[in-house]
Length: 329
Ligand code: GA4
Image 1 (tube, rainbow, N blue to C red):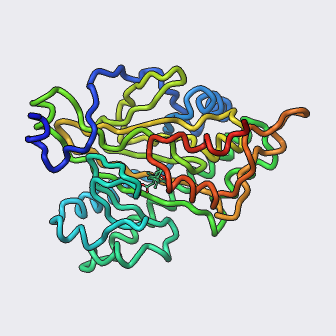
Image 2: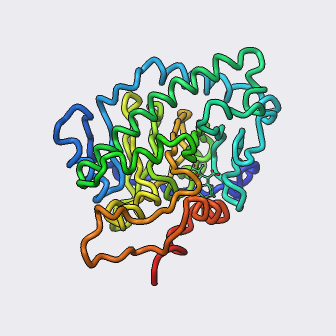
Image 3: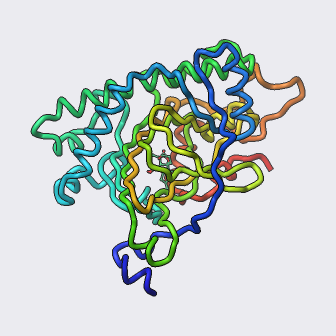
């Protein structure tokens, strides 16, 4: 096949037809708006996804980390490989997870606990690991603060008491959160040959409570609407995008939906994204919040801990319906 001979090194990576409509009605939430709590809940019910503006994360933290990330991804392959393979933390290229998923991507997966920024990752920055460490830490700290606020507003909007019922899981020192820096190189050959795009990160939902994403101005992110249509999310380098994860879907007994999403590589420009995945402590029971449940309402899910869910998720393929195993029949 022509496409394969041009890209022999990535022949197992899926391609995707280009035309998908732009998601023009994307909910935009201004954190300073007194109505934001209601708008957020509405967006999470309808899409499991929204954009945040007026987020108060200093632009300087964002650009500094982006340039550190690019500095890393521009190193030679053999230098980058010293920070891999991801086990699950570290540098990875093309392979996603350990069950056979591949994509047109390279990434650094990091633990969000500053003390645990793994030595393996820092070895690549041996000339000045402190600069990288502080860029990651400043950014994560600011994004975490925003994530707590978002979860508190969601709790307010849903009339969940206490209002920190969700955010406290991320604030917990044992919160099982992680952070990923993704680089999707451009794929011009494929466009020229077939008019198709390579899949950068295949369709999936995020297992955690929420994910906070920021990307540069390169398109690629798509989300799947309720009825199954894929739409492209126009990039916005000054804003953040929030994804509802599987754990939040369960904690709201299905009221908020975890959003299926994917990333297609851009044919011309490289895409850099940074995502904070906020998860609860491993021992936390993931069950619907009592203050949300109606009198006769029953949980749609079997009881499980985050550790059980995570173990099961890490054995799955990206596109699997991971919550399926935990739904009551
Ligand atoms: C999706 C969300 C996060 O990126 C991630 C991913 C993880 C990985 O890259 O190792 C997983 C994927 C994600 C879900 C299913 C499993 C695990 C790859 C994979 C095939 C870091 C996470 O927590 O779950």
